[in-house]
Every structure is written in C-alpha cells, then in structure tokens.
Length: 331
Ligand code: UDP
Image (cartoon, rainbow, N blue to C red):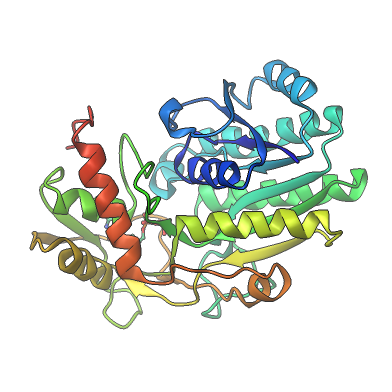
C-alpha cells in the first residue's frame, strides 16, 4: 500500500512515518517544514511542499499515486489560533480542500484525517462521545471542524472513504529515543514541563486555578503518540477491509489536571522546579476527556502506553537527548 503522509516531518507525523516504515509500508512525506524537520523523517522520501501550493501538490500526487493519505499537516496551537485565525483557516481548511482536489486528481481512495477534541468546545458530558455536540471555542477547533465537514461532503459526492480521528492531548516520544516533539515556541503542557525540568525554561506557569475541576486546574486526557499512531494503522486496515467512513475519539478516557501532570514531571525527573499561577489562557476549556470505546470496538485499537509516567518519561528522555544538540533559545 502506497501512503502519502502530510506533515510527516512534524511531531505526530514523524512517529507515524517511523511506524509505517517498521511495518514495511511504502511512504512519501509531504511537509512544508514550517514546524517539521527533515531528520525526523526516518522512512521513505520527503518532498518539501506546502499544501497551499496546489500545483506542486498535484504534481506529487500524480507522480506518487498514493492509495491512501494520512493528513497531519496543520497548525495546532490554540493560543496562536486565537491571535492569528486566518493562518489557521488557510492552513487547516484551505490546505485540506487542496489536498482533496489532489486526491481526486490522482484517484486516491482513502483518507485518515487528524482532527481534535477541540471540536467539542466545552463538552456537556465527560467523557465525551463522538455524537456529542460540537461547538468549538477557538479558531483552531473551528478550522478542524470545518475541515471535517468538507471531508464528509466530499466523501458523499466522490466515494472517498475516510476515518476522522479526534485526538485528545498527544504527548510523549518514540520509546527508542530516535524522534520526539520539537517546537520553536513550545506551548503544550508536558513539553513545557519537561523543558523546565531540564533547565531550558526557568519556571512553569499554570494557566487558571479556578476551573470547575477537582483541583481548579485544566483537565486533559493525555495519550501517548505511539498509541495514537497505532490508531491510524488500525483505521487504514478498517478502511481497506471495507469499513464505512466514520469519526472516532482517541484518548485513554482518563483526565489529569495541570497540577497532577506537573507533579508527575517532578517525580519522573527528580527535579523540583518553580510553579507560578497565571490567568486562564484564552480558548481553553476546563476539561476534555475521551470516551474512546468506539475506536476500541470498531477499529480494534489496543493502546499499550496508558500510563502518564511512561508518557512523561519518554518526553523527558527525548528532551535530554535533543537539548544537547538544540539550537533554540527558549525564553
Ligand atoms: N497549560 C498550563 N501551562 C502551560 C501549558 C498548558 O497550565 O505552560 C494548561 C492549559 O491551560 C490546558 C492544559 O495545560 O489546561 C493543556 O494545554 P496544552 O497546551 O498542552 O493542550 P491543549 O489542551 O490546549 O491542546
């Protein structure tokens, strides 16, 4: 099976490409390298192409003729999306429209799409089910929800088969330590916390302590990046076996507060670091926890790393290793 992976040089995409390589899939990575790194693509070829450059994208599709696409390429930071909504609509929505055009031109039949729990906004029920109402509270969530809609409409019109995976909070790194999360301006909780623990950021900030959660701080469902990638493999198998187009949550069904995550990072790293309280961050819901029963049942997803300690350990190992060669000055 020939697989084209958009965003395959980025954090989640590079773990996916590695896993696909381990399983002997033929892959081609398309990435504009805005966040990704060429060294992170451990398998197959990398083409530096922006999804917004339709001509270049179409050329790659007509040459490679993929059977399926896994579409990661996107802007993914909630705070940035609040400040720069057009950047999000351009990349996440128009980028997806271009991708679907190119897929149609090359006759690509299957799509696995990276969506997000941010489409639920402030959920009415915790854990959240796929059929629960979607009502994003930030431009990032809206850009992904609109992209979902476009994929569904296009599938109806064209016969394209898709699986939409709504990721909860993805964290951790390759257990072999070959790749991990790299960000020029890290915003994600676990990434920032391991950077504080390794002395690259002076202190940790907790955004909001008056949320309606057990300790007042934001609650999220952290899923290990390799388990998430395994869900994509299962989605591909499902589509190839004739499964119907559908949407699935991917998380462990367990929420941890910001304070619990920080405590775990202190424990695993053996470092006690400064923690300061700061105001709530715009666009943040109080709690997001997945009901992933459908992915387990229908896709036969079998997560292996449902352990916050292991997630933190792999993230920390990667940080220790990569910061030795890092050229970023984090302030
Ligand atoms: N958060 C925090 N300090 C940080 C980064 C994040 O308190 O330095 C909180 C954030 O407000 C949210 C949770 O941690 O409640 C997860 O945020 P993250 O950016 O990792 O993921 P998101 O849920 O926004 O996609």
